[in-house]
Image (cartoon, rainbow, N blue to C red; front, top):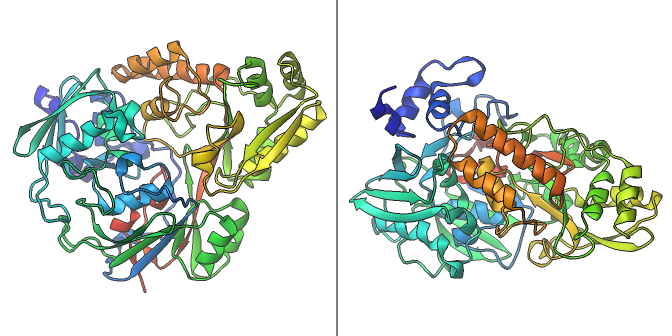
Length: 540
């Protein structure tokens, strides 16, 4: 490749040329090869297991009109229209109705251009972003470089309370360098920037926006109604910059925290699409005429969270003892009916090219658990364990661990709390509980948001200087093998020292009415990584 080609990292022209050319075997395209050669960080997940709802759906002619109703597993009075504060499935789905990002991810987790036409760099530190022309906000004002500068830089302001501040701290500056161009300068090299910019929190808002009661974005829908904790309704943006889109007239999103009620709403025809289907419900959905189940193998996991900054988790022996109490095969089969992949207390899943398979599997070992828990001085005592339907499968996992603990002289008092308010009132606030972590588009984002010492979502309060140093070094390492070894070392550190127990990776299950067409699952989250409303249509 010429030097000029090396500068054009993710342009529309390169993407189109790669996709129109014949792919190499196993779905490895020219685009994938270019990413590997240029960045050493963005090989697409060819091994991810995807299942389209209807064969050849995208070959059909989309139909315009109709209202799509979606029900998620989360509902809260803290629901927000500010992308920076988006924290769960309902938020992600909502903000993607009204806003666009600079990039998005395709079904193989490859970055595609949206409000950016191309991203150019020679060193993965300084990036030139060419912006689309003739894009307008819902209020009719044109999309400009100032909007990008404001949208990205506000994440660095602690007062904004952005959920991705720890990621945005990598951004040193953003400035307009032309009528349709901005320059992003990073504090250090990170070839994953096009992937980072695809996350929901980095969606673009209007320059100077501080009032989010009514969203003013460039997205496919305009707000008709937003009632936090109740519902969100969007109507087609007739001036949307993508010709002919969206196909739907209207979209309604709301939360039904109870899974049984969510399935009933689907099968009764009240909603078209639900996420977080329990494995026990799959047969019922599949055998009901007009409905099917989407299965997507991803990095989704429910984890045991042991706070290491308070007792009893401030004892490493307690942490190890609890990890040895996990019967992973039993959890896989009893809690998830086999719709899961056995995990090993490392957050990178087997579909990820940076997954480290050489880590010896931690077994279910009551004797080792007893040894460590005795050293921690907790045998014979009662330890509260908080679980909720909000963290998928956590109640079943807690009961299974309670039974195992009882056999070695530890009483786990399972506290079942309601889903409403769990993430704001219980998660990361109790000494022993559960999280539920959606997949991240890259290893760097996952580690930065959830395991870096100063991360807002550092669930167990784990602080490890060696891990933090490896994380920064890996971002700028363009030698694939060296970077892979760094991520392997980081997985070992999490496995051995972090207060997180990951028993399985959950196969993402969604229930959908077969009238919904144009679905292409993305192995990051439900509802096509929460962007489906723009692309699907209803076949009445």
